[in-house]
Length: 217
Image (cartoon, rainbow, N blue to C red; front, side, top):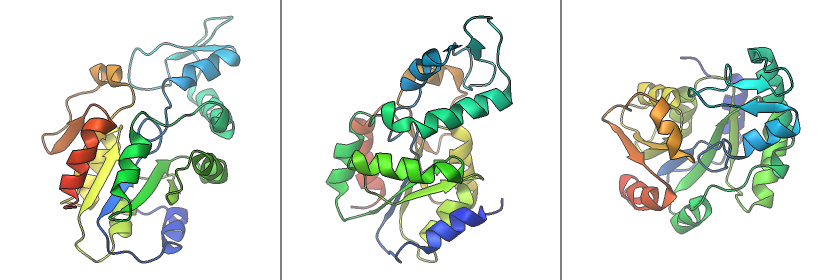
């Protein structure tokens, strides 16, 4: 797996850190996504029917019933992220859990989204009081987490709702502690069971103590 050069550049801007590392996905981990997104779609004349764990094939034009194709889904997602401040709120328990970690860990937000949305997301996170460093990536997350960890053997926790991102980090950082957290647990029904080495948590209230333990704090 190769690095995203822009992600690598963003990581270079961070101050060197030796504290235990907590890397968090944003959508449906720190910010609500799958709850507000259907309301956004409705405002644009589309409907979302979750029949599988993906957006393409599940979004239809309300007037015609036509299922929209990948390029249209991508364009709608772009519009949603441009307007995210109007739609996305903090996942229940996330802010309190992260605040409790205080300065004992390096907390990094790693979001898979086009780099052009980084400034809008940065401003929205700041407005919500989530002023942790934000990295965007358009490639696999594993190499970014490995680069973030650096040469030290410091403990790493990675939290994501997407199994392929957890697998990517496992491939790049063999001893990372992987957490599977979904803002909407009803979507678990669409996923195959996660591997045994992944810690499945139902919400941030359950995740908090387990993250503290995994980071050795």
